[in-house]
Length: 314
Image: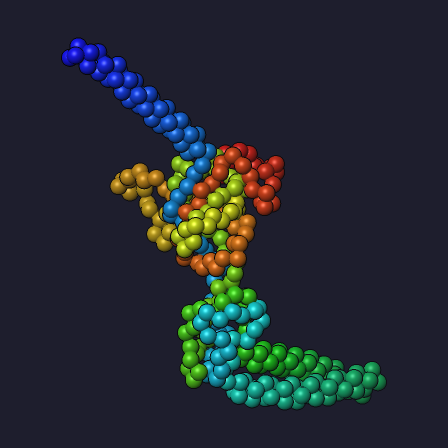
């Protein structure tokens, strides 16, 4: 009986061993296939988490000093290009405009009188009834009066321009942000009153210089935004900055001092969205782009056959 049980146990052990070997082989094959796939994927894709949404934020500032009498928009409100954002008190500038207008009328009258005097003196000079000196004085008076009239016209134009600056308009279509004034505040020329964030945004991705060998404008990009983890945005590489971030910093490193330590530099790459798919995107949001080095985006209009453009060129 013991012999029979022993004989039955041996095949079971062999079967179990073969099952474990088969399972191990399957796992190893899966790992090998996965590793090969990852190597191929990593070879033709570059990504970075050092990226964020960027935009041309328009800072709205005053052109003239004055007191704020009306504010039409508050933070986070939508505005269109040309909408009036802030009104400054125009009283002083209206007075200056009216004074300039009156001064111009007086200057024009003097110029017309001087011009008539010049014509009269010219006729008398041709008849030898006045001296050359008297005629020259009349000519110079006419020219001076004309110049004074031109100057008065310029002053009126400047006064009207200053009056128009009392109404501060939005330079872009977008959303109001960073409102910095209240009604009654006195603002100086050049002071920022608010900012307008346009809808057009892109991704600024700081890739390592070692990642740029095969990267070029037009390549397709998948963009992952931390705010929307379940959605994948699509875009393309628009351009690559001609210089590292350190080279354009406020205090670029001076490697000739002798304290040189080689550090892998990062280069800003501009990535444009093919479509935002209706999602709200704001400057400063974190992003993670993945650049496909093999394929070009259908939305890209970058020519890859022009002079100086070749695979691998920056």
